[in-house]
Each structure stands twice: as C-alpha cells, then as structure tokens.
Amino acid sequence: MEITAEKVKELRDKTNAGMMDCKKALKETNGDLEKAIVYLREKGLAVARKRADRVASEGVIMSYIHTGGKLGVMLEVNCETDFVAKTPEFHEFAKNLAMQIAAANPLAVGREDLDPEVVAKEKDILMAQARESGKPEHVLEKMVEGRLKKFFSEVCLLEQPYVKNPDITIQDYLNEMRAKTGENVIIRRFIRYQLGAN
Image 1 (cartoon, rainbow, N blue to C red):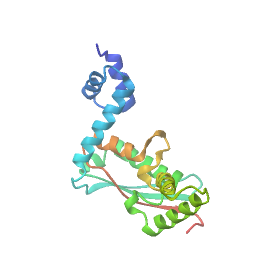
Image 2 (tube, rainbow, N blue to C red):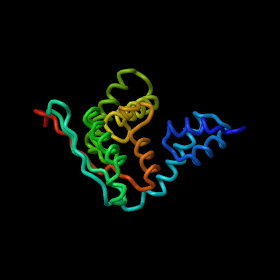
Image 3 (cartoon, rainbow, N blue to C red):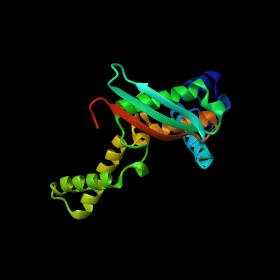
Image 4 (tube, helix red, strand yellow):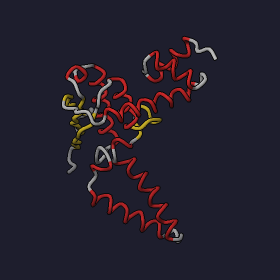
C-alpha cells in the first residue's frame, strides 16, 4: 500500500510525531490512521520507559492563578537539560498541568504518593457499599477493585483524563512530552491552594 504525503501529514498533525516516525507507523499498520496513532503511542511509551532511570534535575516551577484569584497551583516539573526546560513547549506543558490540577483537584501525582490511610479508608467504604449488594465475597473483591480503579483515576494526577483531551490520561500526555523532548520528564510535586479551604 502506498503511503501518501497527505496521510503522513494528517498523522503528524494528530500526534506531533516526526515525519519519518509517522511514515513508518503508517507502513506498519497498512495505512490505518487509528492503528498508526496507537503504534506511535506505544513506541513513545517504550522509549519513555528506557529514559525513566535518567536523572531529571532541571525543569521549572510553574504557578497558575485561576481567574478571580481564589484558586492557585504551584507545580514542579523536571527534565534532564536546561535547554529543554527553557523551551516554550515545556513551559506550555507545565502550564497545562497546573491548569489540570486547578480544574481536577488531584490528591497526589501517582498512586504511590497517596497517603496509605486514605486508600485504606476508601477501600473500607467501597467494601461496605459492595456488601450491601448481597453478592458473594469473591464478587465483592472484584467490585471493590473496579471502584478503587475509578477512585485512583479521580485522585491521582497521572491517571486522570486530560481536561483538554479526555481521550488521553495525564500519563499519556507525559509520555508524549518525553517522546517529543527525548528526555526523562517527571512531574515531581504540586500544591493546590483554594481560598478558605484547608
């Protein structure tokens, strides 16, 4: 099958991947645009995994104050080099993350950052709710597991759907940034302030 320049451009516009990567993805998927997008995301994830152990000590502290000044976020995002940290794309990425935190109010960056007591308490609540269904114990475990996954997708930044593109998670967005920069990019920490809230 012939891969047209228009098709390569369309894939490139949708993914921001390099031209040769787009061409290869289309060849690998026989010109199927949707499969090519998945192929590129999987490739980006594999590359991101290789970079995960590289030191990321550069980056930015980004702040975002929501209109009206009643809500604010401060966020640290790290990368490997000062060069990448200074790019407009990296700053836009950090700002988008700060806006995500303001809008979606996560409790932590990832599951491992959540307070174990919060997770245990949520598990107890979900188990109590599941028991009310009257279903057998082995079914209850599966129910709680599913509901706990939903809980994590609400309170862990990396698992939340990205507000600007709900088809992807923040983890996907992070992986895209890693693929674009060629560096290990890490969302280190954040704090969200809301007027009158503790």
